[in-house]
Image (cartoon, rainbow, N blue to C red; front, side, top):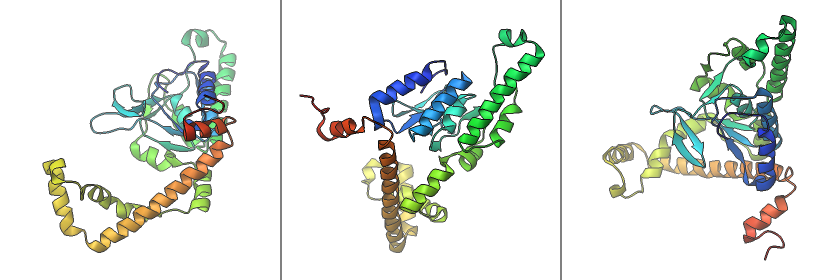
Length: 277
C-alpha cells in the first residue's frame, strides 16, 4: 500500500483480497497518512484476514520499503500518522519508520465550528482511535504519545521502541503459536545469530566473495569449532520446523476466512481454475 489514505481505500482493499484470496499474506506500507477512519477500517480488515504488516525499515543509507516484493530506498519510505493505524492491525508487525501526531481536521471546516461542537468532534475521534488501539492490543501508551504531538509536527519512533513494543506477533497469536508449535528461546536465537552469516558464506567459493567477506570467513573458521557447527545445524533444523508449523497454522486459519480458497488451492496445484480448459 503506497500513497495517501483516502475514502474508498478500504473497499478497494477488500475487492483486491476477494480477487487474490489467500495469496496475500501481508501488507507492505508506505504512506504519509490520510483519513483516520479509513485507516482503521483497513486495519480491521488486515486483522480479520490474519495478515502481517511491514512498515519501512531504517538503515544507515536511508529508509527502505518493500514495494512489489523488492526493497526500495526512498525518502517516501515512511509510515506516518494514520498509516500507523493500519500497521497496528497486523497479526505480525515489522519495520520501524513509524511517525505519530494528533489527528487533524480540515482547518477551514474546524475553524468555523463553535468551540463546543469542535470539542465534541475531536473527542469522538480520539475515543474511536483509543478503542481501535485497545482492540489491536496496543493500548493507551501510543495514544498518549500521539496526543502530545501537534498535528503540524511528527514524532518518529525509535527502532528500539518499535522492536520492543510493537514488532513481532501480537501477544495472543504468539502464545497460540507457541502452544501449537513450540518456540526457540530468545537467548538461544541470540547465541546462534553470530554464526548465521558465517554458515551462509563458509561453503561458497572464494571467487564469489569480496575481500572483506574472505577475511571474515577466514577469521571465523579459526574460532568456530565442529561442536559449534553441529549445534548450529541442530538449531537451524528446529527453527525450520517451528517456522514451518507456524506458517502452516496461520495458513489454515486464513483458509477459513476466504470462501474462494478451494479455487486458489486448485490454481496452485494445476495452474488452472476449477472448470477452466
